[in-house]
Image 1: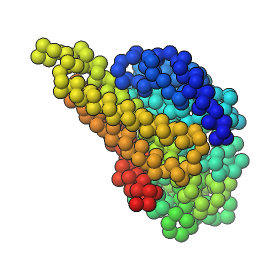
Image 2 (image 1 turned 90 degrees about the vertical axis):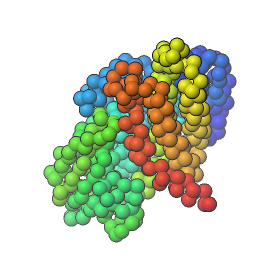
Image 3 (image 1 turned 30 degrees about the vertical axis):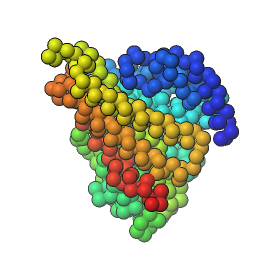
Image 4 (image 1 turned 180 degrees about the vertical axis):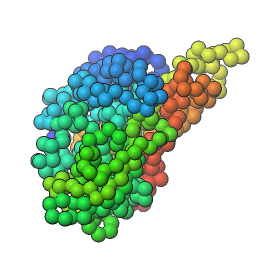
Length: 430
């Protein structure tokens, strides 16, 4: 309840005074509350413990292997179950389906700040592809089943997906329909006890490895009122997949899917027929929150690596960090990263207090745009600080080079900047 959340916030504010400094203490390389002497009202002991858990796993099981996985275009499939056993993969999922939430004192076992910590700490690895493939892809494909799906479907897929045994992807985008979801043309014609699917889906994250797809199809007339969701299994006859090579996210196994007369049992309908648009829209707020937190940490990674380099690199007899023009660049990066993080925490607080999703649609749209623009700015400015080193895959500039290639994916996926700015203004009723 909101009352319980409010009391928790008050307790966290009192407990936060005792939080010890965390991390390397490089200026601006972590959120403000990690630093010695700084406090926050949002975090308590369970957040601190969870932060340490996520950092340990990221530093031991992900970061050292990113360059190798990126060059190979894949990652070990065992990472899913390893992340589950470590208490990360299922940290924000229901206990009844194998969830491992970090705070038993809360009704759900977690709040939006645990979620923010999970995203933020994972993203220190500096690569979005593996994170979307392992941690975030099922976060947009499974919720429709948990929210509106039948008990049969929940029992069929939820536990295996949440525990890392199976992989699940969302298949909405088409060659001719991206942000305009209501214009999708993939059809599902009902014949007896089956739907017959025909059509194509594009840019499907984790698609090459997924056993399950949450697929948006047209079962009725034009527009949003004719859209339904179906659970499609990879081994159903007529499902064809092929890899799409991407600018960034090389480990995300982005996929093009073709459906040719695919027979799907009617019990695989997610929710009601012709009512699939609503659960798709319900997904967007959290997806954009993930992108916002991810993009701002990636901006922070660029800032951190620029600072590290500027402290050791000398030009014209001075460290780069002592050159006024470089100090100004670092200051500008710090300014936008710190202010964006404050806005993300503001959204996390509203989510923790259970503010209506409809009221948060506009603010979350704005924070996603703010964060991706911050990532864009910091990737560019950090590249200027490192010079040629930021153009090489490897060495001091490895993370900056990779993240520069990922900027547009963060800015476009989940709703492009133009679409989201217009959404925010429409909700504001200008």
